[in-house]
Length: 308
Image (tube, rainbow, N blue to C red):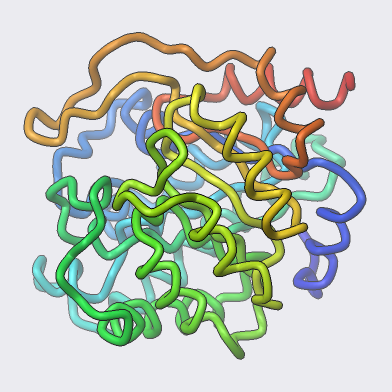
């Protein structure tokens, strides 16, 4: 955590591999919180902000260097559907960053001595819809319309001074174009992370083309994948590193499959800490977990990377 942290985060990324946290939702559910709501974990920003702080703290103490905020599904439109005024929505977006900062302060007060960072989560348009379309993309909106959707909350999150913006779980190269336009001039670096299936985005575009969009974007300091099967990571890391020449960000799911209709996970975990060494050798410099990856797994990742 750093009062002038924007350049410092980029410097940290260039000098070594950073450990990301794991899934926010599974950590909150493990603590007994009900997330059966269209706002998902973002609901707790209003109802139980202390629970968000505790979830971040658990990951910092587990070995994460970077906490990703609970703003993935936090949007002005989503809040409005719940009767939350726009001004209050902006406060909650800012609170998502401050909650992670507070967790970092508590971790350091408890003896964590390494630098701790905050990434402000910016989920895709489909996350706001809460109907599973974030795993498909192709919403029927133009790039300009998607840019208008994303820009207001990006401005609010950037004003809250995170270390980096996490443009994450992006299913569609068209939405990536919108996000890349929206982050220009905000003064905060960003990473761009696609949700993928095999060697394509969820919307079906080849990853080479999707990653290439970020190659010349100065605001983007890392490119990669998240919320995908661990088996899809190896090829994606190599492609992102080759196409962009930038550090790669990787945080897959546990390997289980999300059933959007039933709103439940099926299958079994295939994610192990033994996989991360190969990802690092291929160019990954931000490594963690997404859905169903908890603090124990993050400890394993941190141990494996620091031992190497």
